[in-house]
Every structure is written in structure tokens, then in C-alpha cells.
Image (cartoon, rainbow, N blue to C red; front, side, top):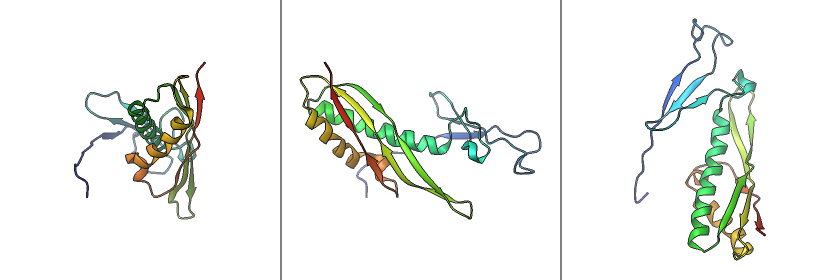
Length: 158
């Protein structure tokens, strides 16, 4: 049981009615808009494999983005409190989803590949080790039912 509960809300509005609703599988767009008060809207769709718009974010990409961002935020926090100065952070997250014969699907694996640059006064070994702590603490990764793996690299600036 959590000591403190946090609540989140977003709105989703489907914008893909072409005039005949869902009268057929190809009759509608998968377009929608995600929104929350005081934040920019996120244009969404389905994966292009499922008739989605490739110019819009799909739920699978948003899941990867959430995992990547959560890890990064925990990692930067841990670096700050452990006196490791990060001056650059990029991640190349990748996920695998299995689609089953009945049309259902699920993620089977996600790999985060953060590339971190630290100052010359920072300890590269400590910077690498803090990824393990961030992985253990990330709220989003702890909520998944599939492995979230990490392949970090650390470079010392200069």
C-alpha cells in the first residue's frame, strides 16, 4: 500500500470521424487528441500498421517515451544528490510488441539506451551505477509486466 496517493487525469477526444463514424474498419481515421489543462495537446493515432497516421504519436511510442522520461528524471535526481554532474543525456529507447492471432498484443520487452555525458570531475563508474538505482525507482517501469532493460553508456566530457 502506498504511503501517498497521486492522481493523474488526461482527456482524449477522437477526431477521426469522416462522416460515417465507425460504419466500417476503413471508414474512420484513428486520429485523436490527448490533452490536460495548461499543457500543449498531443496529436495521437494508432500505429501505421493499424491504419494510423505516421505523423502522430501512437500509444506504443507514448509508452516508450514514458519509460524513457521516467528513467531519465530519476537518473538526473540521483546524479544530483550523489555529486555526479551530468551535462548531456540522450536515450534511444526501443520496444518489442507481440501481436497475437486474436488481434490482441502486448509488449514483451523494452530496452533503454541512455547515453550520458558527465563532467571530468565526476566519477564515470558511479554515473553508470546510478542507472541501476534509477531503474529500481522508476514509477513507470515498476508498473510494467514485461522486462525494462538498460544498456547505458557514460562519457566523460573533455
